[in-house]
Image 1: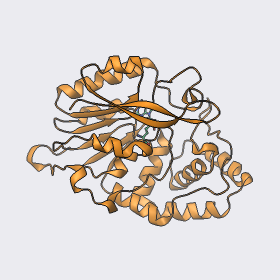
Image 2: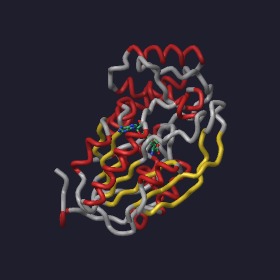
Image 3: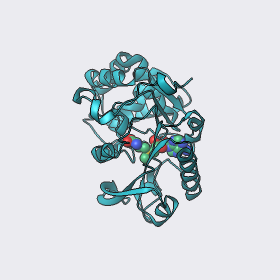
Image 4: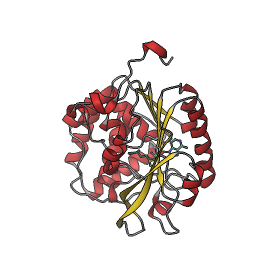
Length: 289
Ligand SMILES: C[S@@+](CC[C@H](N)C(=O)[O-])C[C@H]1O[C@@H](n2cnc3c(N)ncnc32)[C@H](O)[C@@H]1O
């Protein structure tokens, strides 16, 4: 049960955060906001707020950069969520397995482990979490992508992956202590949101153009209809008095959907084509406050 009213220790994240509590995500993620985290943090509500909800958590760039009260993190990707839960509950075990895999890194080992991961794709264990983290770090461009059968199919990329060490994982574990972490659709969490809570939505973006990188490579299917539904959920949250912040692409449809909201334009480097080239593009930080 979420605490309400006087029981909430309300926080102003920017003011009470100490540098030590900021941690880099343990994984790179398509659409990750690591390079926008300072700008996003400037747009957090200036007023005190209650619980924090991030239902498209991905690598959790904004969460790991700030201190939030009673955080709820969730994502549709079960392996990603399994890795968050495994680190929260068993960081040392995850680290031991990562050290083991890192010592053996090679093209052959990568493909062997990728087969193991795919054979066990319906298992959500510490072993599977460590393999997931290892594969994403060692893969081409550090991305997670599956085929129609749900099998991870990214080729080998890096012989010297920057796999998080034990010190990093313990910081992540510390940050995740007491955090509610669930696997599911973003809609699932919305009935828990109360007045004065803060919700950050970072959905998969609509493609910028016909050859946009993510149209080819993303596993996330988030068609226009879902963008429309998300904007309706955001309106509902606005009505109950929650603070809402949304990241999205600067497209005519997105601007139309959030007419009347505060829209801030920022520039970010993103992959924009199949050659994995990065380019500066405009993105939006949309708020109801
Ligand atoms: C742009 S990424 C989030 C990136 C994150 N903010 C970061 O900094 O790493 C979008 C995330 O939404 C998740 N996702 C896609 N569709 C979803 C849905 N319907 N409900 C919940 N999560 C979803 C994807 O798995 C992905 O992790």
